[in-house]
Image (tube, rainbow, N blue to C red; front, side, top):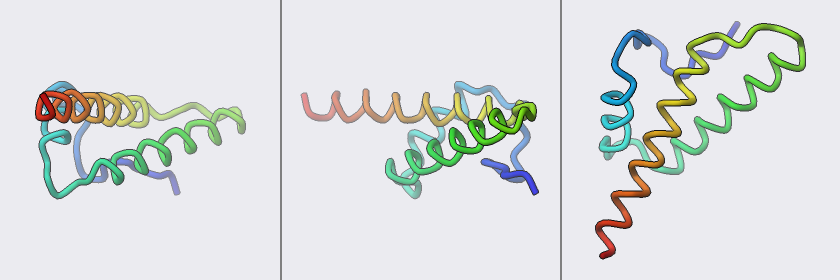
Length: 81
């Protein structure tokens, strides 16, 4: 069974819009986003070590989470100023 970082969500959505939504979603903590990123990256490394292809969903999911974390960081800086 392959890990799916965003089960039930099609990866045809605009990644910028999805990242902004993730960043703004208050029910998802920054810690949870970092943990999800860790799981995604660990899964990619395991697949790569096995010589298996990395699913495109992992590539999209990694980009979404990285962008969401960057947006949150920028927002927290703005709030402190």
